[in-house]
Image 1 (cartoon, rainbow, N blue to C red):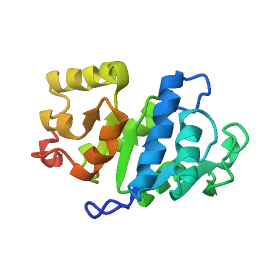
Image 2: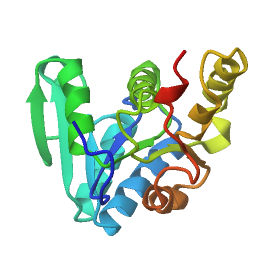
Image 3: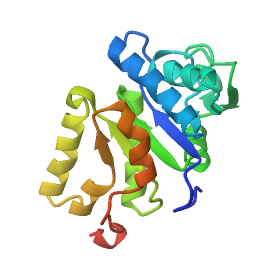
Length: 198
């Protein structure tokens, strides 16, 4: 399991794998890859060469950054594994996500679909259980993630989730703010949430 705290060296990026994504999202993914390389942060990602995933990894690699892709064997063809970067082939989605967690010191969430949502929910659930305090940064162009944040707030309002949960991540609207937000760490004042379990 990843350390609860420590220096930021590797960043996992969750994002969409669709080549049909908004070109602005694809450009932003490339910008993030270059920013991670410039900050000497290793990119850990889903291993594919498609969509925002591929755009981030290619840009980081071409900028001289370190990249680790983690992809299940059954997705190697579908997501066109990017063989120009270091990659590990695993046997299940569970293995993939566990390796993301173990190999990373922080997380960035770019626009994505149901697969990205599934990864994010598990990451935030583990944060809710105080299994980690790693920084989590959402890139939120045009309020892409607004409906998800509204749903989280709805569970807080219903007293099913502690209010402190809403401090578990940082939201930025510009790509250039992602890396500084990662280095800033978890939100100031964010407190352990496990004691709030009822």
